[in-house]
Length: 76
Image (cartoon, rainbow, N blue to C red):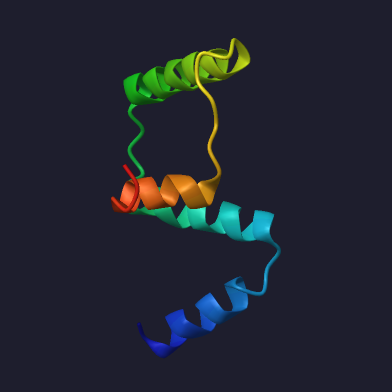
């Protein structure tokens, strides 16, 4: 990372969490500006389905630490 990018990163890390999240999303979007309308629609449907599953109790949430361990393969 060059000096300019390092300075930007250090400044960005001082921002409030919500501002950092918006900045990160904008940077990621800038890498591939094309929008796949079908993908957006399908993701929206998936989000609605998952929220519904939570609302009716078909699935349960787990703490992030536990999920991270499962993802890392430490807990089965």
